[in-house]
Amino acid sequence: GYSQERAVTKAVRPVPSDSSAERTAWMGSRVREKKWLARRKTTRARTIRWSAVFFRVGNITVTGTSPYSAAQIIEATGLKTGGSLIFFEKNRAIRQLFDACPYLETVRIHRNYPDTLEIIVTQSEPMAVIKSGDAAYILSAGGKLLQKTRQPEKAGLCVVTGAELESPTVGKTAKFSSEETRKPLILALNTFRENGIINKIGEVCVEELYDITFTYTDR
Image (tube, rainbow, N blue to C red; front, side, top):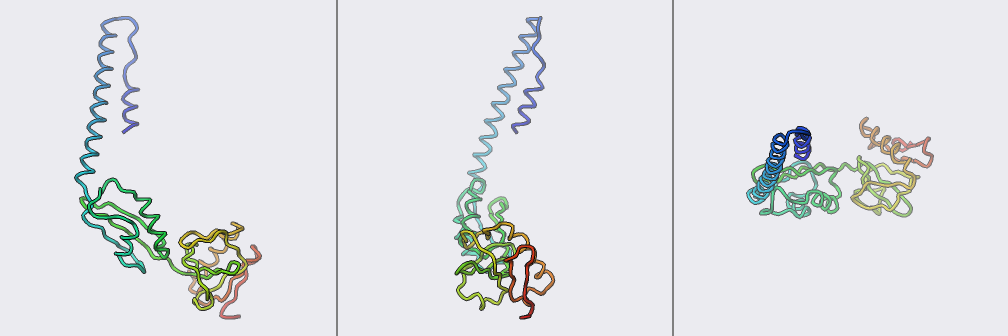
């Protein structure tokens, strides 16, 4: 596109310095080149407009694992059939979906021509309950806050203590008062999960950053 046009412009031979005939020919080539570039831009703009009119959303599908129904997911994105398959606010749709459905870990939206939008989702995996002040939140394997809970001990997950969350918001990545806490905590929890012992961990204390302690089967 743009880089190719610049390359064409740079490739024009230098202005002749003597012969008026050569200069006239050079000026003519410059005029033809500009007209060619203008026609190319016009054709491209018409193609884009035509595509926007021709390719309309006829179907919206949802694939992947999720605790939400396809109807809930589609409604949360704000996407509707009949709209343009080319021009739609993908980032806003994804942001709205994350806000409405916090138990989604990843979201992708693909165009499947000629008329389908495919929403591909993966489900968040609850991994721990993190206590912060008087509140407690369920934390995903990816470090996202899935929901607020008043009974952390009944969630059936290990409990993280010794960490303070900063402006906790459900559906958003957990932010800690000390960001140095995040990486070792998530690493420790995922190590427990990958080794199949996360459900045997009772409490994880990160009060001392370089001395994380935990209880194993109530010991």
